[in-house]
Length: 216
Image (cartoon, rainbow, N blue to C red; front, side, top):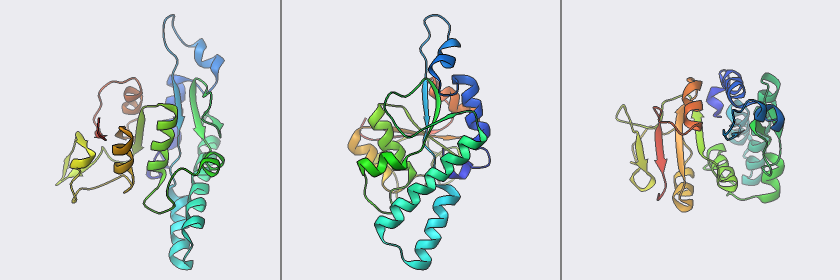
């Protein structure tokens, strides 16, 4: 859930909760018809205005890479607090045994224990979310405030990471293409201002977006 969607994010998350349940095994399963499969939807919060505050502090005070990295992840925690306060989704700090329905990840404890990614501004919540998706074998959807990646004003519907042009309007961090390429993953970039698109993508249905594919 991109930081650019902070105003719209509560509505998006609550729409997901209405569709898939609030991160509770019993309530989510109760909504299912016979033969249906429950969905687990894990919201990884962006950094947004909270990470931007760390960027400003870094620019002013010259933070070390480690300090800036963990402070920015704590910014993701603040976004998670905001989302939990404004929605009916449940919070979690673990990616083991995810419940059915919609959960919001508080990522600091997990990332501090695993420390899987480089400490630089090239790695933001985009690549962190990709790493989490890889750990749990999940479809990776980046909800943001644009329809996808554009080149010369036109939406790119599908692109492989080696083919990403140098001059494209990017809404992803610089580390993400390499991570997708290395791990044979796909990222769907979807405009979260249209929550139905996100829901349809969770169901595996085609929606207007950019599919960024890494060696798959």
